[in-house]
Image (tube, rainbow, N blue to C red; front, side, top):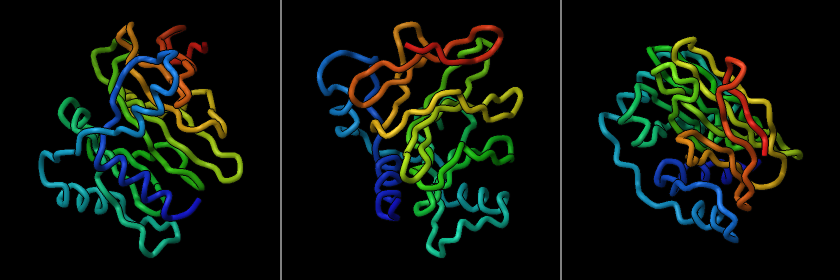
Length: 204
């Protein structure tokens, strides 16, 4: 993956939010909405101060790029409704969550774009919002995966599905008040559900 592609993905996440809708069968809807990314992020608080705090807590981190710069990419709706802060490096695409003064890697990033999409939801109905996210990794065979952070257990859990070489995967609010995984070619991939006392994917 080129440094330029990673920087473009970071730029898109910093200055645009995805227009959210349910999965549909209309030709090109999701692709159009992904490319029509709409509102610029309006930071609440001191972003530079937050990045400095993150870097201090992270300590030594070196992905082998001298020009790897860290940015706060927390979308407004996550900032306003949770205590989650998300940070991403512009060259390696390494992505991290800062929560309660602890740092959690948000999936893999090598060869991919790191975190590409995020949403809040209380899928397990425990009264606290989990942070759901999409991340990409891998060179050659490129994949997108979904994961979430559980604030009660302070764990990152990666869901058991990989979307290979078919374009990006998105988190989309659904009619049941939960989240679905959708591809950019409009296919509904799975719903994220709470069954068997755990959060899992219910495949299409």
